[in-house]
Each structure stands twice: as C-alpha cells, then as structure tokens.
Image (cartoon, rainbow, N blue to C red):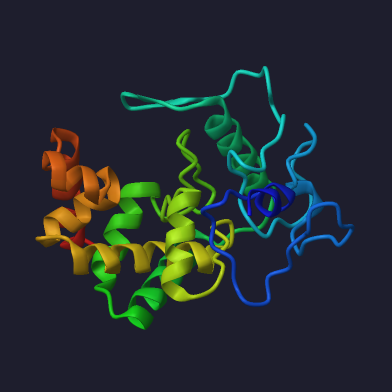
Amino acid sequence: MSAVAAANGINAGSFIYAGQKLRLPGGGVASSGSSSASGSSNAAPTGKLDRPYDESNIGSYKAGEKVPDTFLHYHYSSGVARSAAANREYLAAVDVPSRAEMKNLIAASAKKHGVDSKLMLALSYQESGWNHRAVSPANAIGAMQVIPSSGQWASSLVGRQLNLLEPKDNAEAGVVIIKALLSSASSRDHAIGGYYQGLASVRQYGLFADTKRYVSNIKYLMTTI
C-alpha cells in the first residue's frame, strides 16, 4: 500500500474512489491528475489542477524561498506553507466566482444538504469574506477555508473526490463538514467552534478565547446577512 501511495503522490490514509485512476509502482499509466501536481519538480503551478497542493505533492516548489508560514500564534511547516503559496498562485491565475456568486453557491449547497444557509454564509464571510482566492498560511483553501485533510474527510462524507480549488466543491466541503460537526458536537456553539479549533480540541479543552470570539462573530453575522 505504501508503494501505491508513493506512486500516486498520496499518503496511505488518503481516500480513493470508484473511477479514480491510480498509477502502479513501476508502471507507465498516468493518473487522472495534472502532471504539474505531481510534486516532482520546482516548477510553478500550471494547467488545471484536479487536487490542491499539499505536503504529499508539493515537491521542491519554492524550497528555500521565504513564504508566509505563521497565522495568529501558529507556525506551519515548510511543506504546508509552500503548498499554500502554490495554491494561492494557482487561484490567482484562474477565473473564480465573484463574492456574490460564491454566496449563491454556498447557499445552494446548504439547501442541498439541509444546513442553515445563514450559518454557512456567516461562517464563510468570517473565514474569507466569500473570497474563493483566499488561501491561509495553514493551507486553508477558498471561500470555506478548508485544509486538504479536511477536504478528504468531506470527500468521504459525500462519496466522491472533492477538489477544494473548485468553487462548488469548496462550498460543498464546508457545508458537509459543518453538518457533520452539528451532528457530533454537544452544542451548536461547539460545532461552530469545532470548524475553527477542531472538534477533538474543543472536547478536550473547551473553547479557547479566540474560538469564543469566532463563535460570537458567526452568531452576530447570522443576524446581519
């Protein structure tokens, strides 16, 4: 399994899906992804990507360069920071929806999955201002600010591979994640806080001070959007 994972630029814990093409170790069949996402060189992102950059496929891109690697009081590894820079450059170079169009995509996905659209719009506004080009130093991507590992979780929830670089998939990832948190957390505040802090951390430590402010902001925004 480790050899198959390495041949496809994924880790052994990644989800795979029906219809997804995989490369066998030593084989010559290309995967369905763009060759620019293989992480085998330090070339800049080119072409259309079917998955975001992360530590498994960033390769040596921007190695040795200074890229933003801190957010609030957190410091992120070189692989995470360089992946974020590559995703940021990619989204800056492609067409993305306007903020108004992104709002509509989020609201439509919320309706599809039975989640309060005001909650989702408030959360996305807090996270990115409905800006799909936003990528944080933590490699949180797009309007819903979803990191790649959470995107894999969201993909497992919907039963297909979601590409966080794609606006509709990004919106759906955020919606199904908060839906899962709402069903698992002890309260709505903890579910909202879990989106920011991580539900396991909320359960272990409670809401941190900055998480409490985050939850308060979301609840206020729900009354104004």
